[in-house]
Amino acid sequence: MAAALAAAGSVNAQTPQPPPPANLDEYVKLVRSDVQNQKSQVIGAALALSAAEGAAFWPVYKQYEAELGKIGEERFAAIKDYAANYGTLTPAKATELTDRALALEEKRLALVKRALGQVRAVLPAAKAARWYQVEMALNKAVDLRLAAEIPLAQ
Image (cartoon, rainbow, N blue to C red; front, side, top):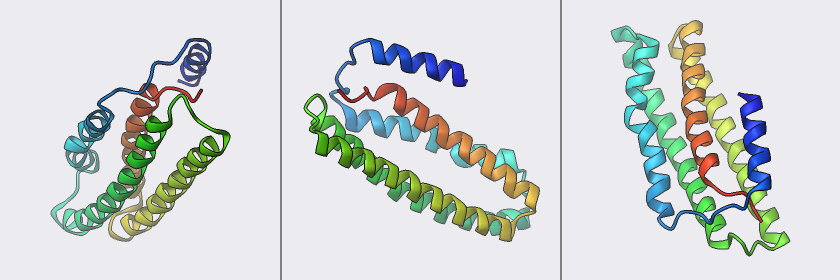
């Protein structure tokens, strides 16, 4: 996987990047909804929760998803800001957008850490670890799909 990403990065660095899609709003919503539409089903199947575990877990998970959605909206706004400035990035704007992206990653990581603590409080350790693994895989799938579609800064 690392080799594929490195190769993709070198190809992107050598070829001109197309501008962001004209329908960016719809595209980002589609990418997010592709995973989110089935996310609860995937999580439920992976965890194989008992009725008691489910009753304790799902409220925690729904709260986590609500907070993750807010971060997603902030990220979406940052992507739109990037698209609006694509091709004309000043050094200051490039720095601002990069710092904004990093702050959002830190915010998401803090949320995951907090949610993992809450999940550990209601599920056995192995199921909490499994939730973390599946959740991170799903989040990374969205991240990778977006990264593949958003052109490199010029």
